Image (cartoon, rainbow, N blue to C red; front, side, top):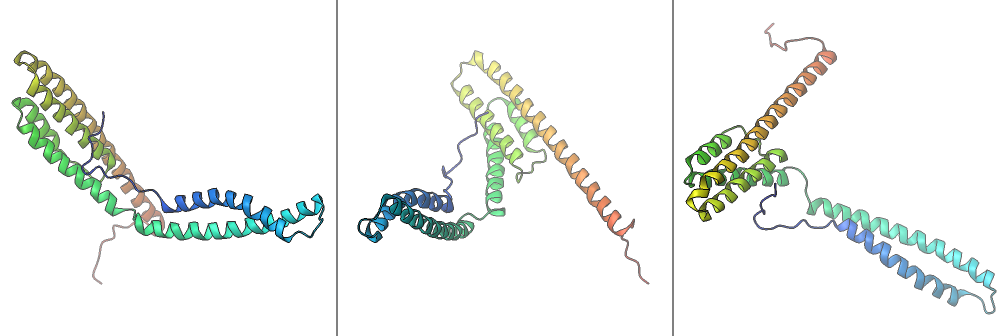
Length: 219
């Protein structure tokens, strides 16, 4: 299902280190073609043979490439450090996605409550009341799909003649059923994974420290 456009229409900024690295590669080739022949032409002795010019060109080429590689690597590493500050990873972006998902779910529930079809509003309220982990991208995708279903249903119901509204409502309820099923499967899958992780952690502690209930006793 097509995701809803995100508010603000933000675009992802490009990585600076890629731009710097690409610039050095592009302009380095151009500089090589210009600088090395000029260096050979100005430094070659008068009447030098083609073989001597070629050897001199190879010497200049080696020094040029070493210098270009050193400068390009230093600039790329420096720009990568700048990128680390410009594009912080972790909780900031994750928190923004979670907040957007939670807000979208609340907005969708309100929008569904305003529909004339009470069964749609009730089903959406039931889905929204289930446990949601908005930090998880999978739940964020489900909240966008739910919003898409309700929004398109609201548009269709507003423009449809009375005799077509029952069919639109039925299709909407079917779509909501699929979302509800997917949400249940996702919740069960995450719960099973959490239980597996907890078991693995307990097994690791038991193997490392020996079986213990870790009870605190007073001597």
